[in-house]
Length: 206
Image 1 (cartoon, helix red, strand yellow):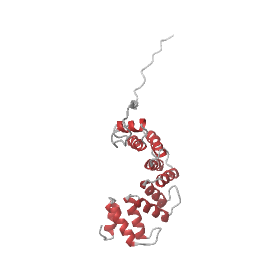
Image 2 (cartoon, helix red, strand yellow):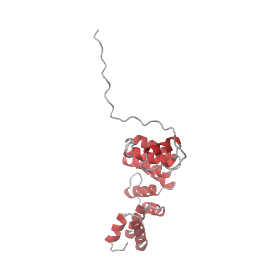
Image 3 (cartoon, one colour):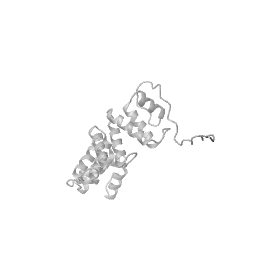
Image 4 (cartoon, one colour):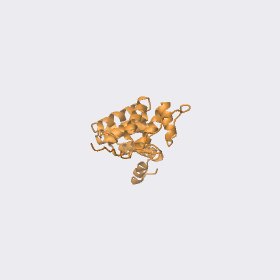
């Protein structure tokens, strides 16, 4: 019988998994760009927001984390279910945009609403966009404007500008130019350049 030869297995392109974390120190919110600290705070101390930060590193493949959208989803879900509302919005974003999972606007809508209901301003803004576009739910500009305004009141300048534009133009609401301009200025002052541009187009001061 001829001898059998076994070739070496082909090298893997996947990096080896990080070594287990054995020490984390006192629980705290990790630095957003410190992979080791975020791993320690999430894996050992189960810090919900640190798990969200770690998930974002895996989603983007940044700051020493390998690109792993499945791991990102797992971490966002843990963070969301542990009480950090921003991670609920992140789960919605992955579903809505088909990142690591098939695109599913209905799932995106569900998780955006959970994030918004639990206090995340970006979740409210994203929910408003779903109502504006009729994605994941029926189009309804009145509800969209209400969620934009809610996002604005929670500190999201994008929501301020979007709600302001709707009030100026009467999109889903009765025209209320003074209120619309006030909200556009609030969005502009908060850093939303689109709101500033809308004010410029109307010849209104910032």
